[in-house]
Image (cartoon, rainbow, N blue to C red; front, side):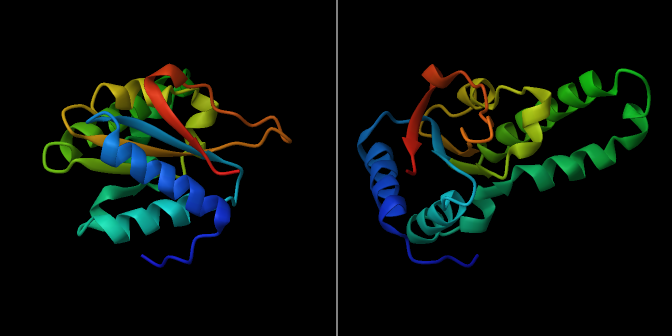
Length: 164
């Protein structure tokens, strides 16, 4: 898991993230928000390397994970109404992943989440049900106001940390 030195904006967000984990509530969802290519992935990989022995076990590229899960269900979504079916399959896949992961670990990072954008999946509402009792879910949230790309989550259920 290669990482690079943090720049000033990443370092400020990293410190806010660590402070929240160390002194904030004992659980919850944290959204690390920034423009595309702002360094969200590098920041979370830095956190995982510095603070967790099982770094790769706690990191999920959600786009790749969901593509793999949907490929397993290919035959069942090849009919009319596929978008609604895919939405449901994505939600079930995410819930199953959270449930299994949090049985043995207390941190999960979701990165590369762009695939859920067109399905309007409220990822924060889902993670909020699982990130409890000492468990955290960090979501790397891409945003581009310039290109009107913004995910609509239940923001009041998560702690927002921005990379400016």
